[in-house]
Image 1: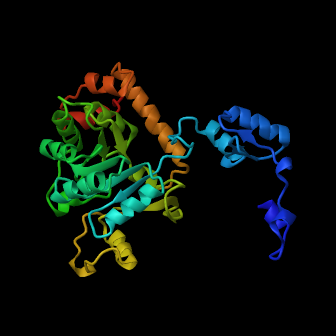
Image 2 (image 1 turned 180 degrees about the vertical axis):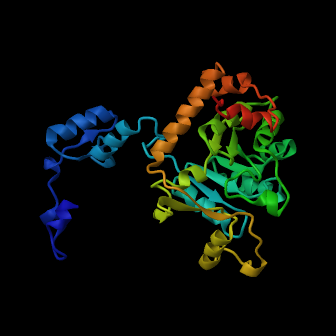
Image 3 (image 1 turned 135 degrees about the horizontal axis):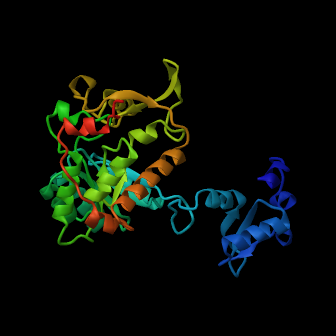
Length: 341
């Protein structure tokens, strides 16, 4: 870019480009630390990676190095990029959308519909995996029953998303009268896969209000969790913080809310009229939380603590060793109150 800034619109490339002999490079196979040493030596912030024929195959940057050390546990792909997932539905154009994202090297696709135990689920999975031969992992859901979990697995999904109605901004249970308590839903999926536990991972979607909820979800049989509202108040979420009653907050809206539907309507991604739409989600505000990394740190700490109390060193051991007991309403809150002196 600096070379181009030094030229004008009528400049010839050879007049403004830095000669090849003056450019510092590293060969294929150079480790990150070695590339950083080379950048320090040549006092540059970026260094190209070239093959034996001198062709460009990649670039190391000092910014990447700093991120790597700041976030050593970040989930990266084979090219050192953050893992990226993308959602698809069952509407016209979703197959083309999925194929376009696969071409863009998305790491995982999520077939995201409210009721995953539908013929559409099987049809979309068959089209992508069999007809289009997509090798990118595809997660499907949502389900909450034993039969639903089996259906998603048998339809060819690489992961199942569990949860009907537990979300912070979800109103499906009130509007449609449908739902399953989240711990029960997770246990249902685990029961469905108990004889083939390594078949596909279980993802608990919704109901995570505090770090302890993550421990419970993992203990019940989930391999991982999805979080929405906890991240809605972070810097990385859309929108700017607003002040309400002296407290900074950010908007959070359910994808089945009226405001989210109005956005889809404006984009032309739905043919349903606003008058005919029945929202199953709400829009509200959540306290501003700063960086998402702080939330992740708390979630991770809570899970590690929960695992230690269960004498579990791994997720698999947590599945085996976590125990659940029923706490009746009068006893639960009373046990958490401080003693009166």
